[in-house]
Length: 282
Picture 1 (spheres, helix red, strand yellow):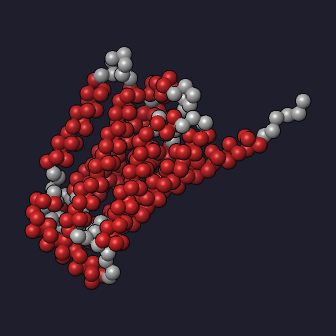
Picture 2 (tube, one colour; picture 1 turned 120 degrees about the horizontal axis):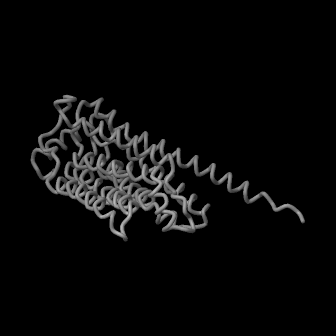
Picture 3 (cartoon, rainbow, N blue to C red; picture 1 turned 90 degrees about the vertical axis):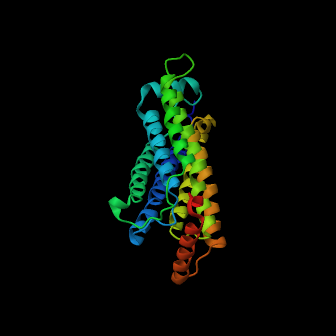
């Protein structure tokens, strides 16, 4: 009897290697994407043109994502509950690069948010750049939902993995919502000056690579429940890419800036629009 062919195993090894390359590539793109905005604020010594709601939600969202990645990777009870619910693909599709990205994003988002504190950095900030009341209520609601979810763990039908899924659902909800304030502010100001397009281009690249890794990992398991079992990674990529395309349309088509002089004029028009609308931009 001839030995079985090793060809499928070789392709599997190669596919896993490609998955790792995709994973760390998306981490690199998404990780670097946070720096252009941070550095732009430092260079301008200003946070004008930025929606505070977006940066607050970024911190809350990545906090949820970081905790969920830690739970999937290191909490035995969560991993067991995941295996019980996905017997055909018992290994979660969360990877170490997912945690690396989430934790890094959380730290950089917190630093960028801190730039709105004029007493700390001394940057220019327009009086209308405040957190809106609806957003305050939404953030408070997120904390309340997490607390209630943890309190329900003792019930027979609710486990710690459901708490993790609550966190991932909140992250998805935040991702759906967080881009809207900045998109609206760009529209009201008729300008994208202050909002880093490099951030958007890298964000789009990272979303595409992240999606490809998830699809490849699920195909290797021959079970597409790897996608439904890790919904935050799947929908996070799609949501990010969709909004990124919208921001590109604003920057390169609707409010295109052709030179430094026009960029200064765009900033002036944006500030005048904020002053005329007052709290309408919040």
